Length: 156
Image (cartoon, rainbow, N blue to C red; front, side):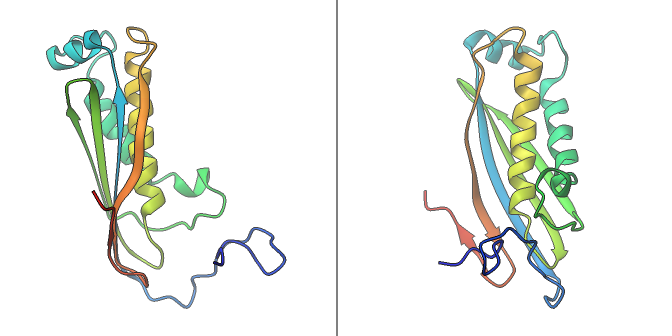
């Protein structure tokens, strides 16, 4: 196994993607925020003191996709051509899914993971005054398509 972000001496490097042709690429990631019954009720009723938690989290996740190169030093600056962040209220958690698309030389897995993670952080920030035990869990890539390695989906 060879890590592409290490040179022959084992030093970190940014992979040179100059020769790659841009292709359509997509990645989906998920995460969840476990919350108390009280918070889940407040989310359903729209009575969280800080306001519309789901709207804030959705916008935070979308905005975060464009900040990945600032956060991850070896990530490439790429065009984000589409980003969708969905949030669903389950019994004891807020389920978050993000799909990010580009037509570029490298994939958007990190952008999708960043979207769900930052959306989850926004949920925690908005509910922490009511529920200090809120926790981010289950953050992972579930699907990617495009590029040299083609399509991949996480087995269920």
